[in-house]
Structures are given as C-alpha cells and as structure tokens.
Length: 145
Image 1 (cartoon, one colour):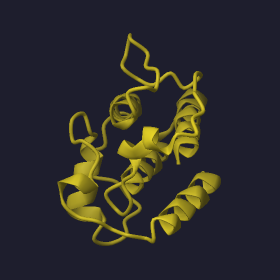
Image 2: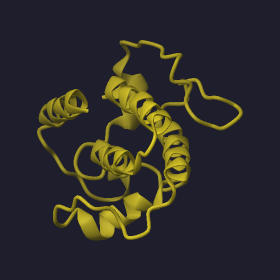
Image 3: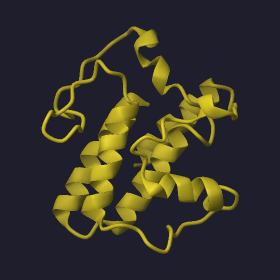
C-alpha cells in the first residue's frame, strides 16, 4: 500500500500535480461504485477517514470495484469472461505509452478515486481471503500506476 501511494505521488508529480475539471477528468460512471459518488459530493472537500454510513458488504463492494476497474482499463487487458474482472495473473508488459492513454487522469478525479476505493475496501476487510483479494487488486493498481 505504501509503495502504491509513493508511485501515485511520483505519477502526479510527473503530471505537474494538475487537477483538470470537466467530464474528461473522470473515469466512466458506468459501473462505478457508489462510494466514488459519495466521495465526490462529500468527502473530497475535507479529509475523511470514515466511509459513507452505509457501505455494502465487503464482497459486494469488492466485486463492483473490480468490474469498474476492468471497465476503465484498456481493452487490450485480458478479462475473465465469467465475471468481467481483469485476469490479474496475466499482465502484458507494454512500452507503448499510447496504450495507457485512457488511464491518464491526473488530479482528484483520476487514480485518487481508485485509491479511495481501495482504502475504504481495506477498512471493511474481515477475513484473510478478503485481504488476499484486496492485495491482488492493489498490486494490479500499483502495476498500472
């Protein structure tokens, strides 16, 4: 987690800490967890550790986040046809930066929204199995960053 945050800060530094607005600053709303809407309306205006008063069960949130994460990733990343999530065990290294262009969303509407989801997801983890799933996805986010 700490390494992911360090790499995210380095990425934002590379972008000059720009914070664009408008529709193009956001990842798609389609399939986006409700937590992101809550964070956009309420929490990002002031720091909040606690999530919304009604977080869904951890497995439901994990599934909705992973489907959304897959939807915002480039089409060339392999997905599991049974659930729409990314195949995290099959990453393809690419040096072609244009292949990642759709992921380039600096500022508070970009990767930060992904980190907020990961943070609140981890707060709800209750079992080793839940934590292992979280770690796999967090590792994938770090790989993308």
